Image (cartoon, rainbow, N blue to C red):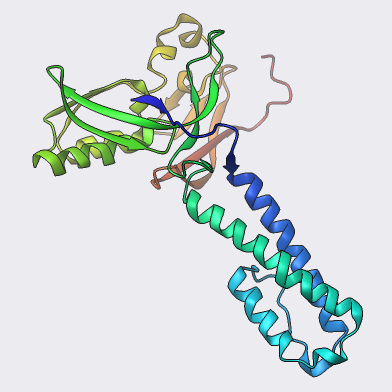
Length: 275
């Protein structure tokens, strides 16, 4: 995998968190304005509003249409001003936020001048600092130095690309490779499951491989990987010798959509621990 910078303007971008935060704020304001307008008109024209229901542009249009059916000549000056703000400003802004989220899809950002480009860290700075720029994550598969497959991805990490990349190669050649060699950036439980399920021999390090080779890691008794596990009794032994019993489980979903069961173990008394 390698990052390819887009030709788009790096200063014109859209971030998911910013859009979602602004959209939520606008939705609250819209609901407050609707409530104020409906207080100022006849009770039988007022619609019951459920504040727990998300306010999208389609629903706002429907509410505006309902209000416009009322006798607007009987409205006060303030109601007319708020209604104009709803129609000309808030509805337009809400549609803009929805368009941003639609273009973004499941990404966290995009460039306004190249909607397919996602902001990613580029290793181009002369001082060794990562630069956040619009670009693509290019994946290349080779065999005997010949390029056999390539694909562009919006996600900055390589971990999530492997299954779809190998499937893309199968579409081109009619078969998966017999073996796959990739660096530790591709090491994940989901990827190992995929390789095993498709009978692909894996030569893929997991992301902690090099760290676990270091003496400081191997000799640190507080790493959970270094705790002794008693399979028969289903407990871990902490550095001070206490048995850590199973206290609960929870389901976790990784970015690939795979679900995992996370088991928690805890010692019974840590207050007087000498360590």
